[in-house]
Length: 172
Image (spheres, rainbow, N blue to C red):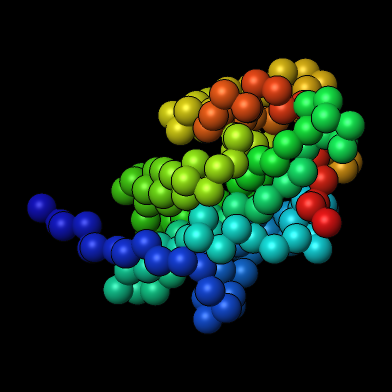
């Protein structure tokens, strides 16, 4: 029986940048920069403690990045702050070994500890349901570009999540 090599999860840092970009290119290709979700990352700074990498004896094997987003306007109607998760990627050699699950759970835990009302992402419900995500509901959130509303998912982290609605934007 082959043992699965150990890995550790550590905070993402500039020293990981080249390996992270190479993994994202391998998993998503260059088209990832054209996606609407990328507009919420441009000019934004990742939530440092929630953006993580998994490293094994062969190097970087997984990454998750999480970004702060403003939800709704300043009028108090549905406004608040949430975390926007993504992208998450795992090297082919580690898929099916629980790396994504460990990265997600740790990142989400940090967001909860830091007081975010919810974590929002754009993805496949069938995949992300195992992490506690559910459809946000048609039209609940508006992203800075076209998006299939059925792919906008949310994981509530507090009672305040129910009040979140409106446009997602980069905090200023």
